[in-house]
Image 1: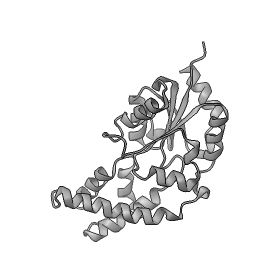
Image 2: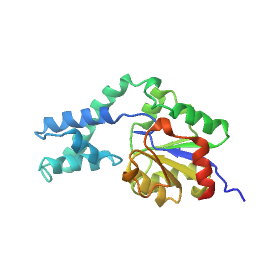
Image 3: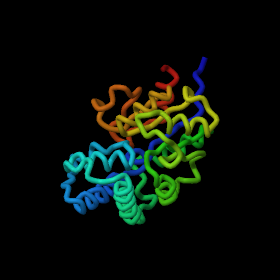
Length: 223
């Protein structure tokens, strides 16, 4: 019997578009403001985690853990976000990663549901700028859930809003924490990135342009 497939649920950053550079520049500027040197290598540690967790990592890198009250941390995170929002004003549909627009439209053509499960609080803004917001049946972002990835809540919430069983969903991610969240929600996990980084994923594609709808569905049916 054919295994039922009802939906694809995507992460945003690094899968549909790459706002990582804007996040990096905004975090780097904030770090400099408080006397911390923040490098691109450091930035790799922030992949897939929430804004406040990212701030804690930066404070740890700079040896300033415990130097700020919770209110001050909230203010620092808000300052970073304001800078980020200014930077992403230049995002347009041309910033959709290679192959992903075609992939998304193939999913739509097949009559499957589309969900977004993002760690970003600005997912709606970014999806609107990309011209993709109306293509998705549900967008779940960091404002909607309590627990960030690797907790499965964001993917489970998306499946719930779509009205589908998580085991009939395929999740697409580019972060280890995101793949853990997908697997924790009993979904089939497709990862984008280096194969060695994703031992828990069901399938791995090095680049977005390599993603194949037919190949993924075939592997899903066999799982």
